[in-house]
Length: 355
Image 1 (cartoon, rainbow, N blue to C red):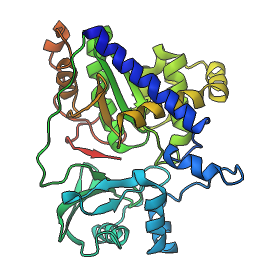
Image 2 (cartoon, rainbow, N blue to C red; image 1 turned 90 degrees about the vertical axis):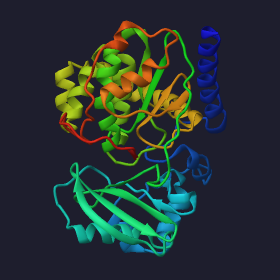
Image 3 (cartoon, rainbow, N blue to C red; image 1 turned 30 degrees about the vertical axis):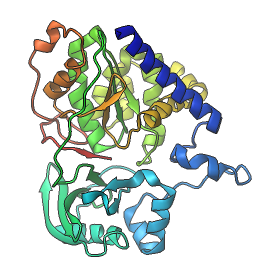
């Protein structure tokens, strides 16, 4: 049964890759979700224009029409609101936190502007700082929820689970050697948070599992267009240096310092970026879409999306539940404190928020 299940997962992965190749033939242009690529490229073979990522520029140009156009053209930015009846746009600015901190009132006004036409009776209930972000509680006739905004007002993310809905558990199939995949974006604050909790868990389990950090099938931050292929090439062609690179990168997002720290072969990396990176990203994208990944981070264990806290102990427990016979490593104790979002290895608070 174990081999059958493993074969089934691997077959599903291959089918996803083949289906993507049949439908699209080419890799999605950088910054464009694969679901929109085919239509946009059919017009005289032109490269699609990049979406505007700056929140204020979107509001300023045409508050009523541009927002709706963005939603239609980018379905991956829509997240479920309370009762599943209303949606809130999720847009990420190009780049990280700038250091230009806005006030709490301005933070609330940004959310109201973005919600116009989608949640007409939205009211801001409370704005407060939490783990280096603004947490903005809001309410409407459909219910209550909250959203996180970076202190400079340029990045916004919404937790996928409504505040009034009980979390559901999911049965994870068991294997002798579990297949564990964490889907993230390189500059998503919650993706980097998850990586920092995930790495100690998979290093503890070592060769008892097949583990890999993968990338979702869309971009939300401009740096990801260059950082994602870089990490893919290191992961695939210099795997022994991948986690050395990644641990340094998660300190403050400094790619150059991370390349030096890990001793990356630049010639080999440049060759991969020119020749193989698109294929590696297409493979990850096909799996991301095939599994139904809808946010960064998303954990997939033995072919199914699995819930887990973002501290190392929670990841260890979740993965260990997927063994037919758990190894002794599953008895070890790891940190039960969630890392902080974005950069740095400081302690933070667990959250279900995604990009």
